[in-house]
Image (cartoon, rainbow, N blue to C red; front, side):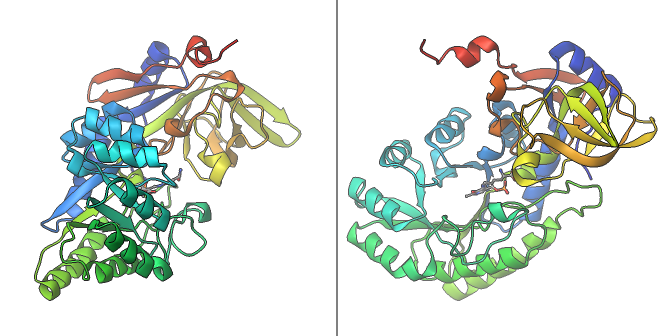
Length: 404
Ligand code: LLP
């Protein structure tokens, strides 16, 4: 595992100054991941668009931008707005909505951002609003791969992308509204370690791309996983890069043109950079079970409760304590609120700080106000510098939108 673990002095200082729970991000890991991505995919005409849904903290996105990430993959008009505010050029932003409304498509198009349509309905509705404009389409390559079944976005059971049997109808709609196809996209799912299925989807996109001589780009989506468990092997990104380059080289030779390749990594860029620092509130022995309660919960990190996902947990305060088997829970009134069940951990005592690792992707961005808790604070560490990047949400801030 190469996830960020704050050291004891650093963690205590952060907890004292900013309180807990707090997401702590190491800027150097963001830079490391940015460099790995850019180095591995060395096809001459490559654009890396960070999937900002994984973590939209602007301080984090800025570090990735400085590391050379070209653009942003978005799913909502607000994500587009933020990407523009952070200085990304509209042509380096792609909007792949999930069942977008006309208003969503209109707003992003008016801001110069390409719409990547995932259904016949989207092409038709876009065509009615913007006859003659450029559009991209997301194909469903019929195959998918992800860490959890619920994160697969390929295959007929998935609601994402245009399936093969609808390709002809999609092409008819492009003609009907005089739309120029600027890009073909696919995203097979979130969280895979090996290239086989991904490469299959790349081949399908390139097969379709050969039919469109005016195409500006092909976009193979994101989904590259990171090690969550100590025994997980890192993704061999260099191998992914080599395989993709081979296919793009063949494509260029066969079609007499070099096409731009885009990728949309989210998790890979940010997951390992961040640990959720929390304090143990309660040690509770119930018969043979030891429960360790913390001052955070599924409201701040829902992944274990939602997908059964694994996050490694380290006792920062008492790393040398005797090993015990405990279930680590949150403070939310839900039986599902667990971070780990029957996990070995160094003697967890009330007041100890725990770090829940690899929490940078789909962490605080998926948080909620359940049980009237505010969203957690976020801090960035950059060498010796430590700074707050998101304030803890106050009671007043949660309540301000209620009318009563
Ligand atoms: N592109 C598209 C069109 C996507 O839908 C996604 C993720 C990505 C790129 C980035 O995928 P990544 O590189 O991050 O795997 N909440 C889940 C993950 C949901 C992913 C949604 N789409 C989790 O916590 O594992």
